[in-house]
Amino acid sequence: MPVSERLFVLSQHILPKLALTRLAGCFAGWKGGGVTTAAIRRFIARYHVDMSEAANSDPAAYATFNDFFTRALRPGARTLADARLVCPVDGAVSQLGPIDSGRIFQAKGRDYSAAALLAGDAELAARFADGHFATIYLSPRDYHRIHMPCAGRLLEMTYVPGELYSVNPATARGVDRLFARNERVVCVFEDEQGQPFVMVLVGATIVGSMATVWHGVVNPPRRPAVEKWDYRGQDIRLAKGEEMGRFLLGSTVVLLYPAGPLKFNPQWQAASPVRLGEAMAS
Image (tube, rainbow, N blue to C red; front, side, top):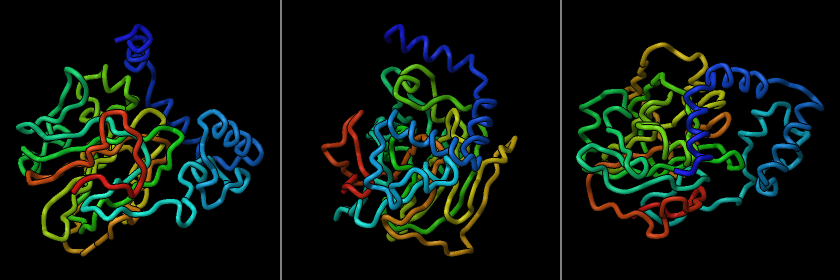
């Protein structure tokens, strides 16, 4: 690992991540008028955000930084591929492949257990023991709404308290069990064939909050213990490509699928850029 990466990872252990995250969340929700607009313009320039894809391309139209960060796309900016599973976000592939006896690959020399990712739910993790996973990283410049990879019925959601490490590629290479250590929201669905799949929204440093369309903002508050919601009696169904949640500042989505003849898009490799709606797997 290069020295610069080692120093960055070291800083992740030292920084007051929760305090920084709370401060960023306060600013992101502040209606600061010209100050907010100036911050948005600076962010667009710094990260080369393509505002031509936004439903509203005027930085001054957003009352808060959160409004800008969770901006909608203009109609027609993305199309859904004719595939069993489509990409749920804009971002880049972190890793993907088989779940090997319940272990999920994170980076060279590092993996973590599906059970740990799923808040210690061994029964749920067993359903994916020899299945498939995909981890997708959303950079600051990306569109930050999360959509459904296929049609699904919501079964349950679990909030899991945890750390707030950065989730960029350098941290993934340098911090053990990163995605099973960070704060996260675990969403369990079943598809139209009755097969389960999981979408895990992973928090990170300065990710002010995570939200779902059925619950609203999940955090804050940041709860001290695991909290679970059961939706089996509510018949909440979302269509392929429909919005299911969003990050207020960037992060990562981990998808889990059970064992079966799933084939990922051969163009998907580690670090490959991906876009919402493109073919993910068949």
